Length: 156
Image (cartoon, rainbow, N blue to C red; front, side, top):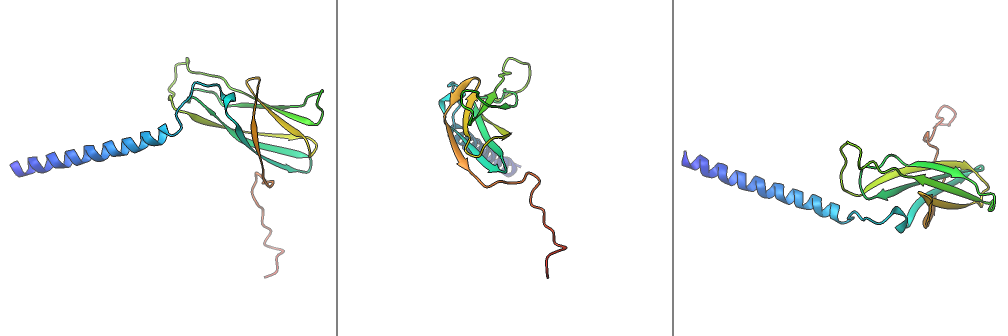
């Protein structure tokens, strides 16, 4: 009987050590990108850009200090003073005081905007009315429906 008690004690100790190590690794991964109290406009935002047949597609993600924000509302407009520009406005709504479950970890919120504009249009990003520096990455146009293969007309 004593032998089983000693064995259960060691199994329990090993389980606690492994659990502690797993939690430590998880929190280390979270602390690599610590939440900041700085506004979202303090960082450069990377946006993927694709152009085809007069249509621009902007896809990106905005990192916010916690998970209590609503989804981003992207709005694309043009400026009468700069006719060759596209203004992408993102509006965030902090729902921290609403009675719901949210976490105090930095959360990424994706967004996508599609607009008609000339090919050489310059993109300006505004988050909650403030201009934000952008790292624009040019990519090939990807059809959101995927690639359609017509295998009936292909020779074998």
